[in-house]
Length: 441
Image (cartoon, rainbow, N blue to C red; front, side):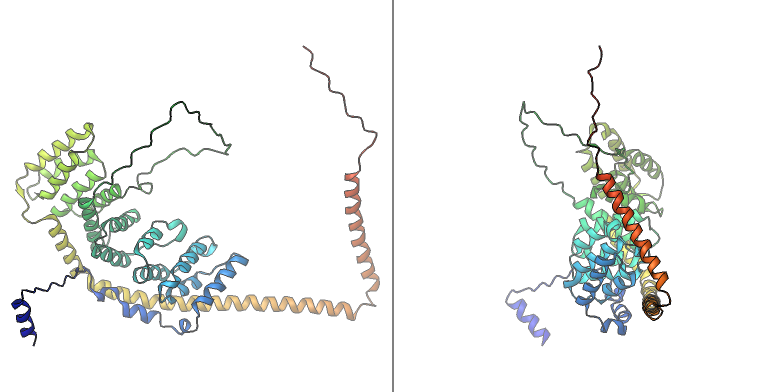
Protein backbone atom coordinates (compact mmCIF):
# COMPACT_ATOMS: atom_id res chain seq x y z
CA UNK A 1 0.00 0.00 0.00
CA UNK A 2 2.78 2.43 0.97
CA UNK A 3 4.76 1.50 -2.15
CA UNK A 4 1.75 2.23 -4.40
CA UNK A 5 1.18 5.56 -2.67
CA UNK A 6 4.81 6.54 -3.23
CA UNK A 7 4.58 5.63 -6.94
CA UNK A 8 1.43 7.72 -7.29
CA UNK A 9 3.10 10.77 -5.75
CA UNK A 10 6.14 10.66 -8.01
CA UNK A 11 3.96 9.90 -11.05
CA UNK A 12 2.06 13.16 -10.47
CA UNK A 13 5.33 15.09 -9.86
CA UNK A 14 4.46 15.54 -6.20
CA UNK A 15 7.41 15.27 -3.85
CA UNK A 16 6.45 15.50 -0.18
CA UNK A 17 8.98 16.99 2.21
CA UNK A 18 8.45 16.69 5.93
CA UNK A 19 11.14 18.71 7.69
CA UNK A 20 11.76 17.96 11.33
CA UNK A 21 14.38 19.94 13.18
CA UNK A 22 16.56 17.37 14.90
CA UNK A 23 17.05 17.68 18.64
CA UNK A 24 20.41 16.88 20.12
CA UNK A 25 18.87 15.29 23.22
CA UNK A 26 16.45 12.38 23.22
CA UNK A 27 13.14 12.33 25.08
CA UNK A 28 14.65 9.84 27.50
CA UNK A 29 17.16 12.46 28.68
CA UNK A 30 14.37 14.63 30.11
CA UNK A 31 13.26 11.78 32.44
CA UNK A 32 9.65 12.98 32.22
CA UNK A 33 8.24 9.76 33.64
CA UNK A 34 10.56 9.81 36.66
CA UNK A 35 9.75 13.51 37.19
CA UNK A 36 6.00 12.82 37.15
CA UNK A 37 6.48 9.92 39.58
CA UNK A 38 8.28 12.27 41.96
CA UNK A 39 5.27 14.60 41.85
CA UNK A 40 2.68 11.84 42.32
CA UNK A 41 2.69 12.24 46.10
CA UNK A 42 -0.78 12.26 47.75
CA UNK A 43 -0.15 15.82 48.96
CA UNK A 44 -0.59 17.15 45.39
CA UNK A 45 -4.02 15.54 44.99
CA UNK A 46 -5.26 17.40 48.09
CA UNK A 47 -4.26 20.85 46.80
CA UNK A 48 -6.47 23.34 45.02
CA UNK A 49 -3.65 25.33 43.48
CA UNK A 50 -5.67 28.56 43.10
CA UNK A 51 -6.77 28.56 46.76
CA UNK A 52 -3.27 27.54 47.81
CA UNK A 53 -1.78 30.61 46.14
CA UNK A 54 -4.34 32.88 47.83
CA UNK A 55 -3.44 31.42 51.24
CA UNK A 56 0.29 31.89 50.64
CA UNK A 57 -0.21 35.43 49.35
CA UNK A 58 -2.40 36.35 52.33
CA UNK A 59 0.12 34.87 54.76
CA UNK A 60 2.91 36.89 53.16
CA UNK A 61 0.86 40.12 53.13
CA UNK A 62 -0.21 39.84 56.77
CA UNK A 63 2.87 38.31 58.40
CA UNK A 64 5.65 38.75 55.84
CA UNK A 65 6.35 35.02 56.03
CA UNK A 66 6.61 32.49 53.21
CA UNK A 67 7.79 28.91 53.52
CA UNK A 68 10.25 27.42 51.01
CA UNK A 69 8.50 24.04 51.12
CA UNK A 70 5.15 25.69 50.28
CA UNK A 71 6.67 27.37 47.23
CA UNK A 72 8.20 24.04 46.21
CA UNK A 73 4.83 22.28 46.40
CA UNK A 74 3.19 25.08 44.41
CA UNK A 75 5.90 24.94 41.72
CA UNK A 76 5.61 21.17 41.34
CA UNK A 77 1.80 21.21 41.34
CA UNK A 78 1.49 23.42 38.23
CA UNK A 79 -0.16 21.64 35.30
CA UNK A 80 -0.83 24.52 32.88
CA UNK A 81 0.37 28.00 31.96
CA UNK A 82 -2.34 29.75 33.99
CA UNK A 83 -0.29 29.73 37.19
CA UNK A 84 3.16 30.68 35.86
CA UNK A 85 2.77 34.36 36.80
CA UNK A 86 1.75 33.31 40.31
CA UNK A 87 4.85 31.11 40.53
CA UNK A 88 7.01 34.02 39.42
CA UNK A 89 5.39 36.21 42.08
CA UNK A 90 5.98 33.62 44.82
CA UNK A 91 9.63 33.19 43.82
CA UNK A 92 10.17 36.94 44.14
CA UNK A 93 8.37 37.10 47.50
CA UNK A 94 10.35 34.15 48.84
CA UNK A 95 13.51 35.99 47.84
CA UNK A 96 12.57 38.85 50.19
CA UNK A 97 12.15 36.59 53.25
CA UNK A 98 14.59 34.82 55.55
CA UNK A 99 13.46 31.50 54.04
CA UNK A 100 15.20 32.19 50.72
CA UNK A 101 18.27 30.25 51.84
CA UNK A 102 16.10 27.14 52.26
CA UNK A 103 14.85 27.08 48.66
CA UNK A 104 14.87 23.49 47.42
CA UNK A 105 16.69 22.38 44.27
CA UNK A 106 13.48 20.79 43.04
CA UNK A 107 11.84 24.25 43.08
CA UNK A 108 14.41 25.58 40.63
CA UNK A 109 14.14 22.61 38.28
CA UNK A 110 10.33 22.74 38.46
CA UNK A 111 10.43 26.42 37.47
CA UNK A 112 12.62 25.70 34.45
CA UNK A 113 10.54 22.70 33.36
CA UNK A 114 7.22 24.55 33.77
CA UNK A 115 8.28 27.56 31.71
CA UNK A 116 9.80 25.31 29.05
CA UNK A 117 6.65 23.21 28.76
CA UNK A 118 3.84 25.71 29.36
CA UNK A 119 5.26 29.20 29.14
CA UNK A 120 7.46 31.58 27.22
CA UNK A 121 11.13 30.57 27.08
CA UNK A 122 12.10 34.23 26.75
CA UNK A 123 10.45 34.99 30.10
CA UNK A 124 12.32 32.06 31.64
CA UNK A 125 15.64 33.48 30.44
CA UNK A 126 14.72 36.85 31.97
CA UNK A 127 14.09 35.10 35.30
CA UNK A 128 17.43 33.29 35.07
CA UNK A 129 19.21 36.57 34.29
CA UNK A 130 17.87 38.09 37.54
CA UNK A 131 18.95 35.73 40.35
CA UNK A 132 18.88 38.57 42.86
CA UNK A 133 15.09 38.85 42.58
CA UNK A 134 14.15 35.24 41.80
CA UNK A 135 17.00 33.02 43.00
CA UNK A 136 16.69 30.48 40.16
CA UNK A 137 19.90 28.91 38.85
CA UNK A 138 20.56 26.29 36.18
CA UNK A 139 22.13 22.94 36.90
CA UNK A 140 23.81 20.83 34.21
CA UNK A 141 20.62 18.94 33.30
CA UNK A 142 18.29 21.93 33.01
CA UNK A 143 20.98 23.87 31.14
CA UNK A 144 21.29 21.03 28.62
CA UNK A 145 17.52 20.76 28.13
CA UNK A 146 17.06 24.52 27.77
CA UNK A 147 19.97 24.89 25.34
CA UNK A 148 18.68 21.96 23.29
CA UNK A 149 15.23 23.56 23.04
CA UNK A 150 16.57 26.99 22.04
CA UNK A 151 18.98 25.55 19.47
CA UNK A 152 16.15 23.49 18.00
CA UNK A 153 14.10 26.70 17.66
CA UNK A 154 17.12 28.44 16.03
CA UNK A 155 16.92 31.09 18.75
CA UNK A 156 20.67 31.52 18.95
CA UNK A 157 20.54 34.83 20.84
CA UNK A 158 18.67 33.36 23.82
CA UNK A 159 20.82 30.22 23.60
CA UNK A 160 23.94 32.38 23.85
CA UNK A 161 22.46 34.18 26.88
CA UNK A 162 21.85 30.84 28.58
CA UNK A 163 25.40 29.74 27.75
CA UNK A 164 26.71 32.97 29.29
CA UNK A 165 24.81 32.16 32.51
CA UNK A 166 26.73 28.88 32.70
CA UNK A 167 29.95 30.83 32.17
CA UNK A 168 29.07 33.35 34.88
CA UNK A 169 28.57 30.47 37.32
CA UNK A 170 31.97 29.10 36.16
CA UNK A 171 30.63 25.55 35.97
CA UNK A 172 32.66 23.80 33.28
CA UNK A 173 32.72 20.24 34.63
CA UNK A 174 30.02 18.74 32.39
CA UNK A 175 31.28 17.91 28.89
CA UNK A 176 27.87 18.01 27.20
CA UNK A 177 26.94 21.36 28.75
CA UNK A 178 30.22 22.88 27.58
CA UNK A 179 29.76 21.53 24.04
CA UNK A 180 26.21 22.91 23.78
CA UNK A 181 27.37 26.29 25.14
CA UNK A 182 30.17 26.42 22.56
CA UNK A 183 27.77 25.62 19.73
CA UNK A 184 25.22 28.22 20.92
CA UNK A 185 27.84 30.98 21.15
CA UNK A 186 29.43 30.06 17.82
CA UNK A 187 26.07 30.09 16.02
CA UNK A 188 25.13 33.44 17.56
CA UNK A 189 28.47 35.01 16.62
CA UNK A 190 28.37 33.77 13.02
CA UNK A 191 24.72 34.73 12.47
CA UNK A 192 24.89 38.06 14.31
CA UNK A 193 23.83 41.11 12.34
CA UNK A 194 24.17 44.50 14.06
CA UNK A 195 20.96 46.45 14.32
CA UNK A 196 21.14 49.86 12.62
CA UNK A 197 21.27 52.61 15.20
CA UNK A 198 18.61 55.28 15.06
CA UNK A 199 19.88 58.75 14.05
CA UNK A 200 20.17 61.12 16.95
CA UNK A 201 17.63 63.96 16.96
CA UNK A 202 19.09 67.37 16.03
CA UNK A 203 20.10 69.41 19.04
CA UNK A 204 18.41 72.74 19.58
CA UNK A 205 20.93 75.54 19.76
CA UNK A 206 20.97 78.24 22.42
CA UNK A 207 18.53 76.38 24.58
CA UNK A 208 19.11 76.84 28.29
CA UNK A 209 18.77 73.65 30.28
CA UNK A 210 17.90 74.01 33.92
CA UNK A 211 20.34 72.01 36.02
CA UNK A 212 18.66 70.12 38.84
CA UNK A 213 20.80 69.11 41.81
CA UNK A 214 19.70 66.48 44.30
CA UNK A 215 21.32 65.95 47.68
CA UNK A 216 22.35 62.32 48.26
CA UNK A 217 24.09 60.61 51.17
CA UNK A 218 26.99 59.33 49.07
CA UNK A 219 28.06 58.84 45.47
CA UNK A 220 29.09 55.35 44.44
CA UNK A 221 32.27 55.29 42.39
CA UNK A 222 31.82 53.63 39.00
CA UNK A 223 33.17 50.08 38.90
CA UNK A 224 33.24 47.54 36.07
CA UNK A 225 34.14 43.96 37.04
CA UNK A 226 34.28 42.65 33.44
CA UNK A 227 32.17 39.66 34.46
CA UNK A 228 28.74 40.22 35.99
CA UNK A 229 28.64 43.78 34.66
CA UNK A 230 28.81 42.66 31.01
CA UNK A 231 25.44 43.29 29.33
CA UNK A 232 26.29 42.97 25.63
CA UNK A 233 25.30 39.49 24.38
CA UNK A 234 28.05 39.45 21.74
CA UNK A 235 30.71 40.27 24.32
CA UNK A 236 29.29 37.63 26.67
CA UNK A 237 29.33 35.07 23.86
CA UNK A 238 32.98 35.80 23.17
CA UNK A 239 33.95 35.44 26.82
CA UNK A 240 31.92 32.24 27.16
CA UNK A 241 33.54 30.74 24.08
CA UNK A 242 37.03 31.72 25.26
CA UNK A 243 36.64 30.49 28.85
CA UNK A 244 34.96 27.18 28.01
CA UNK A 245 37.42 26.43 25.21
CA UNK A 246 40.32 26.87 27.63
CA UNK A 247 39.31 23.78 29.59
CA UNK A 248 40.68 21.30 27.01
CA UNK A 249 43.65 21.50 24.67
CA UNK A 250 42.51 20.15 21.31
CA UNK A 251 42.21 21.48 17.78
CA UNK A 252 38.50 22.35 18.01
CA UNK A 253 38.85 24.25 21.28
CA UNK A 254 41.91 26.11 20.00
CA UNK A 255 39.99 27.40 16.98
CA UNK A 256 36.99 28.37 19.10
CA UNK A 257 39.27 30.10 21.58
CA UNK A 258 40.54 32.36 18.80
CA UNK A 259 36.99 33.45 17.97
CA UNK A 260 36.24 33.85 21.68
CA UNK A 261 39.15 36.19 22.44
CA UNK A 262 38.32 38.14 19.28
CA UNK A 263 34.68 38.77 20.21
CA UNK A 264 35.64 39.32 23.85
CA UNK A 265 37.91 42.11 22.54
CA UNK A 266 40.97 40.82 24.36
CA UNK A 267 43.29 41.45 21.44
CA UNK A 268 46.51 41.00 23.43
CA UNK A 269 45.44 37.50 24.47
CA UNK A 270 44.30 36.80 20.92
CA UNK A 271 47.70 37.72 19.50
CA UNK A 272 49.62 35.72 22.12
CA UNK A 273 47.42 32.64 21.72
CA UNK A 274 47.55 32.76 17.92
CA UNK A 275 51.33 32.93 17.99
CA UNK A 276 51.48 30.02 20.42
CA UNK A 277 49.25 27.55 18.56
CA UNK A 278 50.55 28.41 15.09
CA UNK A 279 53.82 26.71 16.04
CA UNK A 280 52.11 23.44 16.97
CA UNK A 281 52.30 20.74 14.30
CA UNK A 282 48.92 19.24 15.23
CA UNK A 283 47.07 22.53 14.79
CA UNK A 284 44.65 22.80 11.85
CA UNK A 285 42.94 26.09 11.25
CA UNK A 286 39.33 26.18 10.05
CA UNK A 287 38.45 28.50 7.20
CA UNK A 288 35.53 29.84 9.26
CA UNK A 289 38.02 31.21 11.79
CA UNK A 290 39.87 33.12 9.08
CA UNK A 291 36.56 34.44 7.73
CA UNK A 292 35.48 35.70 11.17
CA UNK A 293 38.84 37.44 11.64
CA UNK A 294 38.67 39.08 8.21
CA UNK A 295 35.09 40.21 8.78
CA UNK A 296 36.03 41.74 12.12
CA UNK A 297 39.12 43.36 10.62
CA UNK A 298 36.92 45.29 8.18
CA UNK A 299 35.00 47.07 10.94
CA UNK A 300 37.46 47.24 13.83
CA UNK A 301 39.09 50.44 15.09
CA UNK A 302 42.26 51.47 13.29
CA UNK A 303 44.50 51.00 16.34
CA UNK A 304 43.71 47.25 16.50
CA UNK A 305 43.92 46.52 12.77
CA UNK A 306 47.67 45.64 12.83
CA UNK A 307 47.01 43.00 15.52
CA UNK A 308 44.24 41.32 13.53
CA UNK A 309 46.18 41.50 10.28
CA UNK A 310 49.13 39.85 11.99
CA UNK A 311 46.83 37.10 13.37
CA UNK A 312 45.32 36.47 9.93
CA UNK A 313 48.78 36.25 8.35
CA UNK A 314 50.03 33.89 11.06
CA UNK A 315 47.04 31.56 10.81
CA UNK A 316 47.10 31.58 7.00
CA UNK A 317 50.64 30.19 7.15
CA UNK A 318 49.49 27.20 9.21
CA UNK A 319 50.76 23.95 7.70
CA UNK A 320 47.36 22.24 7.45
CA UNK A 321 43.82 23.40 6.88
CA UNK A 322 40.85 21.48 8.22
CA UNK A 323 38.70 19.96 5.49
CA UNK A 324 35.58 19.59 7.66
CA UNK A 325 33.59 22.69 8.59
CA UNK A 326 33.82 24.05 12.10
CA UNK A 327 30.06 23.74 12.66
CA UNK A 328 30.09 20.08 11.62
CA UNK A 329 32.99 19.40 13.99
CA UNK A 330 31.06 21.08 16.80
CA UNK A 331 28.01 18.91 16.12
CA UNK A 332 30.20 15.80 16.17
CA UNK A 333 31.64 16.92 19.51
CA UNK A 334 28.11 17.29 20.90
CA UNK A 335 27.15 13.81 19.67
CA UNK A 336 30.29 12.32 21.23
CA UNK A 337 29.54 14.08 24.52
CA UNK A 338 25.96 12.74 24.46
CA UNK A 339 27.23 9.20 23.89
CA UNK A 340 29.56 9.56 26.89
CA UNK A 341 27.21 11.24 29.35
CA UNK A 342 23.66 10.23 28.38
CA UNK A 343 23.36 7.03 30.39
CA UNK A 344 25.02 8.49 33.48
CA UNK A 345 22.95 11.71 33.33
CA UNK A 346 19.67 9.80 33.12
CA UNK A 347 20.51 7.57 36.09
CA UNK A 348 21.74 10.52 38.17
CA UNK A 349 18.58 12.50 37.46
CA UNK A 350 16.43 9.58 38.60
CA UNK A 351 18.44 9.32 41.81
CA UNK A 352 18.09 13.06 42.34
CA UNK A 353 14.31 12.90 41.93
CA UNK A 354 14.08 10.12 44.53
CA UNK A 355 16.19 12.07 47.01
CA UNK A 356 14.17 15.26 46.37
CA UNK A 357 10.93 13.38 47.09
CA UNK A 358 12.36 12.20 50.43
CA UNK A 359 13.60 15.69 51.30
CA UNK A 360 10.15 17.12 50.51
CA UNK A 361 8.41 14.61 52.79
CA UNK A 362 10.90 15.37 55.55
CA UNK A 363 10.44 19.14 55.19
CA UNK A 364 6.66 18.74 55.23
CA UNK A 365 6.80 16.72 58.45
CA UNK A 366 9.11 19.28 60.06
CA UNK A 367 6.79 22.13 59.06
CA UNK A 368 3.73 20.24 60.34
CA UNK A 369 5.46 19.63 63.68
CA UNK A 370 6.55 23.27 63.89
CA UNK A 371 3.05 24.57 63.16
CA UNK A 372 1.55 22.11 65.64
CA UNK A 373 3.97 23.29 68.32
CA UNK A 374 3.07 26.94 67.66
CA UNK A 375 -0.63 26.09 67.81
CA UNK A 376 -0.25 24.25 71.14
CA UNK A 377 1.76 27.13 72.63
CA UNK A 378 -1.00 29.56 71.62
CA UNK A 379 -3.62 27.31 73.21
CA UNK A 380 -1.60 27.12 76.44
CA UNK A 381 -1.19 30.91 76.55
CA UNK A 382 -4.90 31.38 75.92
CA UNK A 383 -5.73 28.89 78.68
CA UNK A 384 -3.39 30.65 81.11
CA UNK A 385 -5.05 33.98 80.35
CA UNK A 386 -8.50 32.50 80.93
CA UNK A 387 -7.37 30.92 84.21
CA UNK A 388 -5.92 34.25 85.39
CA UNK A 389 -9.23 36.00 84.68
CA UNK A 390 -11.14 33.23 86.45
CA UNK A 391 -8.81 33.40 89.45
CA UNK A 392 -9.32 37.16 89.72
CA UNK A 393 -13.08 36.67 89.75
CA UNK A 394 -12.99 33.87 92.34
CA UNK A 395 -10.60 35.64 94.74
CA UNK A 396 -11.89 39.17 94.20
CA UNK A 397 -13.00 39.89 97.80
CA UNK A 398 -9.81 38.44 99.35
CA UNK A 399 -7.65 40.60 97.02
CA UNK A 400 -9.89 43.68 96.97
CA UNK A 401 -7.35 45.93 98.74
CA UNK A 402 -4.58 44.83 96.42
CA UNK A 403 -6.74 45.48 93.36
CA UNK A 404 -7.66 48.97 94.64
CA UNK A 405 -3.97 49.81 95.09
CA UNK A 406 -3.23 48.69 91.54
CA UNK A 407 -6.07 50.87 90.24
CA UNK A 408 -4.74 53.89 92.17
CA UNK A 409 -1.24 53.36 90.78
CA UNK A 410 -2.61 53.30 87.26
CA UNK A 411 -4.63 56.49 87.87
CA UNK A 412 -1.53 58.27 89.21
CA UNK A 413 0.41 57.34 86.10
CA UNK A 414 -2.39 58.67 83.91
CA UNK A 415 -2.51 61.95 85.94
CA UNK A 416 1.24 62.46 85.57
CA UNK A 417 1.14 62.12 81.81
CA UNK A 418 -1.83 64.52 81.58
CA UNK A 419 -0.14 67.17 83.74
CA UNK A 420 3.06 66.92 81.71
CA UNK A 421 1.12 67.54 78.53
CA UNK A 422 -0.68 70.54 80.07
CA UNK A 423 2.59 71.99 81.39
CA UNK A 424 4.21 71.73 78.00
CA UNK A 425 1.28 73.58 76.43
CA UNK A 426 1.20 76.46 78.92
CA UNK A 427 3.15 79.55 77.92
CA UNK A 428 4.34 82.53 79.93
CA UNK A 429 2.17 85.51 78.96
CA UNK A 430 4.67 88.01 80.43
CA UNK A 431 7.52 86.67 78.30
CA UNK A 432 9.30 89.43 76.34
CA UNK A 433 11.48 88.24 73.45
CA UNK A 434 15.01 89.73 73.30
CA UNK A 435 15.69 92.65 70.98
CA UNK A 436 18.04 91.81 68.13
CA UNK A 437 20.32 94.74 67.29
CA UNK A 438 22.14 95.17 63.97
CA UNK A 439 25.78 94.09 63.84
CA UNK A 440 28.40 96.74 64.52
CA UNK A 441 30.60 97.65 61.58
